[in-house]
Image 1 (cartoon, rainbow, N blue to C red):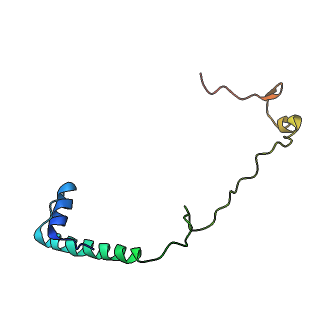
Image 2 (tube, rainbow, N blue to C red; image 1 turned 180 degrees about the horizontal axis):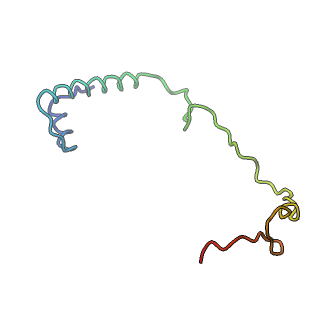
Image 3 (cartoon, one colour; image 1 turned 90 degrees about the horizontal axis):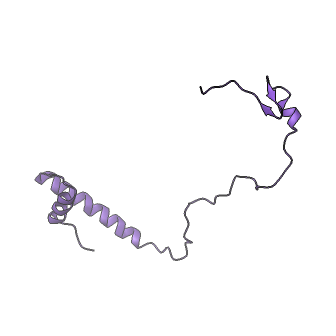
Length: 96
């Protein structure tokens, strides 16, 4: 694994339009080096037997099947309506 150097940090800082002083460049070099060493350590893990997945936990669809079933009785639905017009609720006009 290639070690990250000050010139790498300066290049990334230039791309990100960041101005870093010498102390910040040294700190960033050390921190990015640690991150890359950790990622290299993760690469050592054998994941060949792990099945690819989008979630770490199994998910089930919580929705019921979309099946045709009887609806409510129309007269029961309209029984408590203040006003009705035929088989419809009658409501006050809200848009002039």
